Length: 500
Image 1 (cartoon, helix red, strand yellow):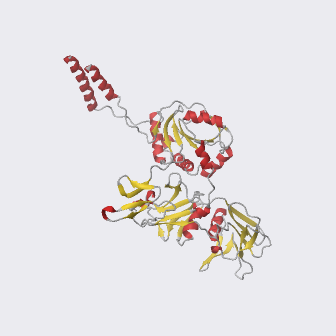
Image 2: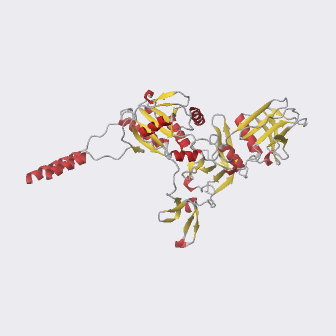
Image 3: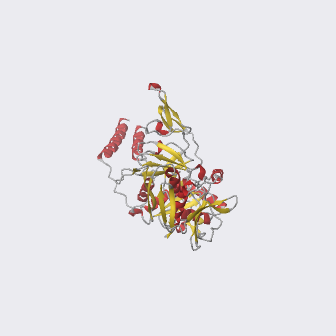
């Protein structure tokens, strides 16, 4: 009996499972089998045609307001920055969990919006039900319906939170002027503007090298669209005095032109009528973070230092004369509020490409996003980031000092001077991103969107080594200590047998 026990100890020691080398959750499943669906171009797509030995499959839906765009942008970063050892060895797919709305045309719009080219697949509901089951995915249709039925983005409720380098924050409503709208439309259309920015606001002198003469033979006249009369009217106030939310359609008309702009279209727009009667129009059907920033911080007296590049778009360098240093020791960080997780998240795109986000924040990169107050909070940060983590206010004095945490926040365990998110907050939905091996068996899964491209890539590399796609560094041979342990245990077994 003792000999058997000693031998059992040897076997146990030689088969102790090592800690997982993966950052994601490790799966043990068989192959998902054959998968035939339809891609964003309307073509039949078979997963069997994927030649790369490692396959990443994300389950998303395009009406998802937060998680799915983040996942798509994160995978885009993973694909872009794959190490040389994985180039040509990892493929990417996205499969919808909402086939009712995610038609090939909808998926094509989604891929164009996010500038990704890997297959985004849809199909008949019964076909997808089988695919989901084989991948081990549970689709909560009622949650998807809830998110798909959410109201459209309402610019009137949008805000921008600004945090300076001292930790002081202030939330500003989005109240764009007619000049903000003109500037953003001109940038989008590529129009060049000539302006006189004097004490009385902005005056438009020229558009596309068509400049009004100094003798005022004609001038650029500002017109607004009247929804009640359904007609264009000459504005009675300057462009800076126009509320672009109440008056979302503007027209700049040469005073000597006989032509008038046509009926406006889209959410908001700017028309131009040149002296010769030719016209131009720029329609804006979404509100970019750039427009939101101009119409919140700029309007409320915070000067902005913004540069524009044809390749990269607009970049924020400074707010209220506080410019980021040239040595990049910190930079202005753009964040978006995730209503589902009740937390600020780094934007995965620039401010030109972050659209229809109800609440955004600008903060130095040295500021922890968890310290930035949530939108609508009655308590603003006042330069002390350690005070209730920016999510409440201190009450009492001495030993009785404690935080009055904002709604949705509680004390951190026994620390009454710290406010953290209440762990009981329900997550409305989540998604799964799986890594499959060459046999198309799911090996690793990452849930939700709170993971980094670097961590995900590390799992790709680890799996590639495990299945022999790339070489693994030679494992060290068992050291003498292991041999001594084994010999000792065998010796114990022999001694036990001899005594018996």
